[in-house]
Length: 166
Image (tube, rainbow, N blue to C red; front, side, top):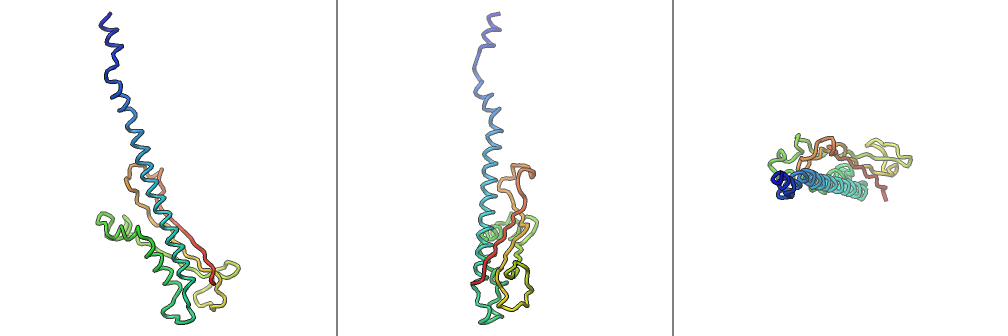
């Protein structure tokens, strides 16, 4: 009976058992923090890029030279230039040679709006222009670690910016 009692009261190895029980929980929290941090970095960079594109588009002096100063193209180029995470994917051979994992490129939509926030056609007179809306919808986000299941992580990033013409 003494041997059984001594073996039952022995505390050797309890730290290893506790560590083995808690390690998966700690890893899930750590990798979750990494993935969500990377997601929020992507969102902030996307929002800043779209805002930069809208700002560049409204600063264009279209009336000076309409062929060279197209606010649509200037805004699209500014967004693609400011979204530096896309450039990082271009340099990374694992990311599919410059696009998202599925070969998706950054698609930028630019629209003109009037005072009532209604969409104008591209041929609208310059004096009717009030707002420039720049939008990126559905850019595929690639997680950093991929540890968390898809149901726990957003898979797409979108951003919209509306700037008024001076």
